[in-house]
Length: 242
Image 1 (cartoon, rainbow, N blue to C red):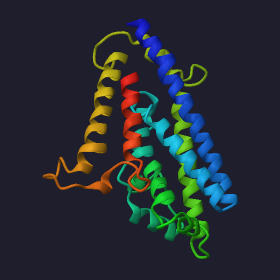
Image 2 (image 1 turned 120 degrees about the vertical axis):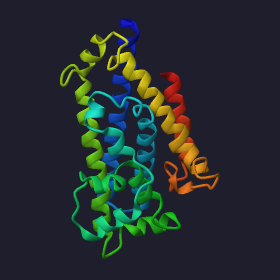
Image 3 (image 1 turned 90 degrees about the vertical axis):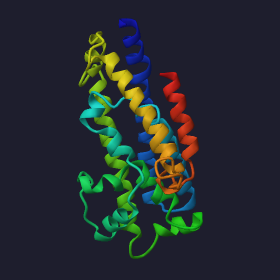
Image 4 (image 1 turned 135 degrees about the horizontal axis):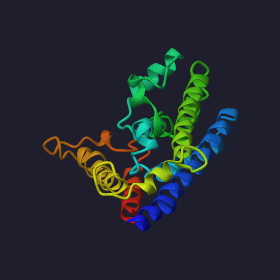
């Protein structure tokens, strides 16, 4: 058990968070570049960085214990479907607190999915969404605020695991029993929970398996980008690897 826990801690959890942090940093940089120059090239680079980070998220969502549980990371980064009315209301108001429970459905990857893919019929329309004379700057600000919030949460969770900071990795490795709350128990329970999210939240509910076979496609993850299946495949790979 000690060997298993050490291997998972060092070679899966720490490595996956490190990879996610790298992709999130790239997303934040792409957001900054786009805010400085609102054009198609920067917009497409931001989209690419967004999807890379979203795929990376599929590999850490299963670890919703320890630092991630403390920061409710899954809720803050990937609550879907997103509330587009709330997003638009926040932008129009110009003042918002992204930490409020009322904004849980208006932040994270799903909100970015809407802002980068659901605001127009073409790429040109979506770029012009951010150059609008009345609301363009407010929309860019909201976009970058979301990314900054996500990056901050992820940094805190990652640091919570590191031996040089919160050192939860030591707690994880030292808990070698099988009782409730032990590392093996946390892994098994969260693996099951994450698989249920994949099976029901990402596949079953959009297909209508919870609503008498009435499809609810808008409830799929990454609805606006059309990348739902692509992300689900990454999720399956991540769970299979674990």
